[in-house]
Amino acid sequence: MVDADEHSYAEPARVAIDDLALDLALDFDTKTLAGSATYALQWKDQTATELVLDTRALVIEKVDAEVDGGWQPLEFALAGADATLGSKLTIQAPRRPEKVRVSYRTSPDASGLQWLAPEMTEGGQLPFMFSQSQQIHARSWVPLQDTPQVRYTYSARITTRPDVMVLMSADNDPEATRDGEYSFSMPQRIPSYLMAIAAGDLVFKPISGRSGVWAEPSMVERAALEFADTEKMIAATEALYGPYRWERYDLLVLPPSFPFGGMENPRLSFITPTVIVGDKSLVSLIAHELAHSWSGNLVTFSSAKHGWLNEGMTSYVENRIVEALYGEEFSDMEWVIARDALKRDIGDMPEATQALAIRPGTPLDADDALSQVSYDKGAWFLHFLEERFGREAFDRFLRGYFDHFAFQSITTEDFLAYARQHLFDVHPGKVTEAEIDEWLYGPGIPAEAPQALSPRLGIVDSARLGWRGSKQLPPTQITSQWSTQEWLHFLEGMPETLPVAELEQLDQAYRFTGTSNGEIAMRWYPLAIRSGYAQANEAIVAFVRGIGRRKLIIPVYEALVETHDGLALAKAAFEQARPGYHPITTASVEKVIADARPSGDAAPAPAADAPAAGADAPAAADDGAASN
Image (cartoon, rainbow, N blue to C red; front, side):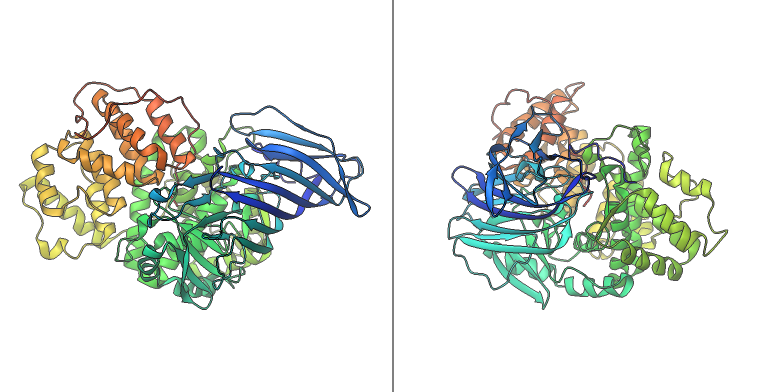
């Protein structure tokens, strides 16, 4: 029996949404979606007389039921708002109607929507809007049973201004023309967090017959070149784990304010432009979002407490795709970088959240499902199983797993039961129950965790150590061939601080300050801040103003707020950046600033063009790290 989802008011064991039909007007002037959501319902408990939905900051105008071919009003009550869960919407439905319709409108401040003025976009001509429903933000733009335990089909009619293109996580037509009215259908069942919508100055560039890129006109050619291997990735994953079951796989490149690296919305992954660096060195993110088409979208965790089933499984499959296309050497570098980061950070996490599967009764914020533990410890656990059972047997197991649980939402216990029957018992003596229990429920990283080695990163270690000892930079014939991964490893191995003269030497040689590669910047700028390298201040402010991807900018803010002067710079930069941030990013930065406890005054001074610092923002819930 599936445990109740503590992050939803819904009661899907009594009544569940089977199909959703949306009819919404998208208004850029009021920054709202308004219209209706009609639910086809499956009444499971014949004593049930209420439909309970999740909402957040929605205005509910009326509720009707289809009765005898017409629509009749139903009584409803909208409870007060909980800071995390939003407001419970209880609809009285004593006759258990097959269809219920809720008429509503969103708030301009909906946590799952971002509205961008034209000047905040790449092209600067038309406004832009996009959603981010994961984990529990779908309820801010559609009243729903906002839990992954409920999967439903959906259709939508969206009307808006005629000069923008509207897309959804559904059957987007590559040949669609802009006319102000768009219709969509999603015939495969999805959970609410995979609901997605976007609207803006968007054009399409094909990659293959079933895949392509949507982006603003000035970005689409660069994106299509960077993501040219997408069809190869699909084919490689199909060879490993069975057919792609979602018909099309397109990519939507969002403006820089998108708070995540990517979001695996079915048929239309949302992608940050920060991975478009010109050399395909960061396209493992595309492999990750594609992998979700099997692990996450096809087989879904039943609640945030089982987040590793989505993210750990996907990170493992991602690495297998990377290896298939770019070779074992490249995939080993990715393993090493991810695991080194986890080893550095896991000891600072609360012990309960160091476990892959959270035991019943342990409190968990919904977005803690997106922690490094779910991603990297989860992938490490699956690599452990691969090593113990052999790749051929483990691949066969995973392919069967995806087939068996296709279009279902499951728990860790479901995974374990299937694994015992189809892997552990078929190959007895390969693992013990104690080892499995330690991986899933224990803190830290088990001692028997397999290790990844990378000769290329070993050369980087030697180069760094040589420079630290002699102050002689490594030969350019070595560094000129380094990939992004090697530069990341070079910087991650540095001490907490360096003398300013050494930072100047590195900066003059490698031009880290002002880099267009966000992964390098997120490692260089905190080091510069901690070391008092004030020459980087202007570029630091430009960096956090220019993008809203939390993974890249939160470490910079965290380094800034460690000192009084740095905190002032953080506040000033945030006030400049706030209008272009997604609400999720805004909440995360507000929390970093509100929780700041600076010590000392040895931080860099504010950049010359930074305005005066604004007032402290109130604390807000942090929505977790987004490794994807």
